Length: 165
Image 1 (cartoon, rainbow, N blue to C red):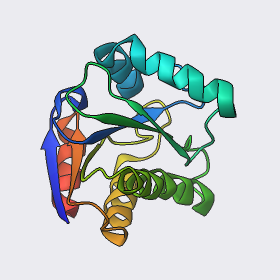
Image 2 (cartoon, helix red, strand yellow; image 1 turned 135 degrees about the vertical axis):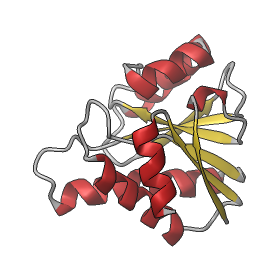
Image 3 (tube, rainbow, N blue to C red; image 1 turned 30 degrees about the vertical axis):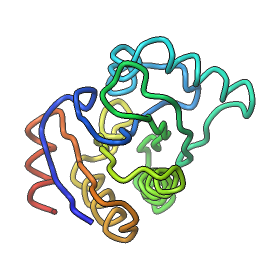
Image 4 (cartoon, rainbow, N blue to C red; image 1 turned 120 degrees about the vertical axis):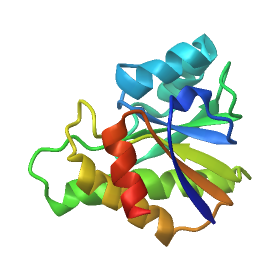
C-alpha cells in the first residue's frame, strides 16, 4: 500500500473514494463536510437523507457510503469523528475507528484508492498532532487498499503528516 500526503482541497482529488468528516445528522455542515456537499451537489445530500431515513443518525466512528455526485471521485464515505473533550482512550479509539472502518468499507466496495481529510481537527478540536499519529498508525495497521492519500487543507497539518509518514 502506498501512502502519500498532499496539501489541497479534498473535493478536487481524483481517487476512487474520498472520506467526509461528517456530523451525525449526515445532512451537511461546515468545514470539509460543507465543502464536499457543496462541490458534490444535492445528490449527496439526497443519498444521505435516504440512509438517515433507513438507519437514523450515523454514530461516532461509524461509516456510510454514497455517490460522489459532481466530485471527481466515484464515492464518498461519510464518517463521524469524535469531539475532543478529555483526550481519553475512548476518543482516540473512536477516531481510529473512523479510519479503519473507512478502509474496510472501501475494500468491501472494491475501491482501491482513498483520500482522507484531517478528521476531527476542526470544530471537534482534536489536537492535530495526536490526530495525525492516530490516522497514520491506523492506516498502516490496515493495508487493504492500493493507495491512501492524506489530504491536508493547511500547511500545519501537511507538515505534521509528512513528518510522521
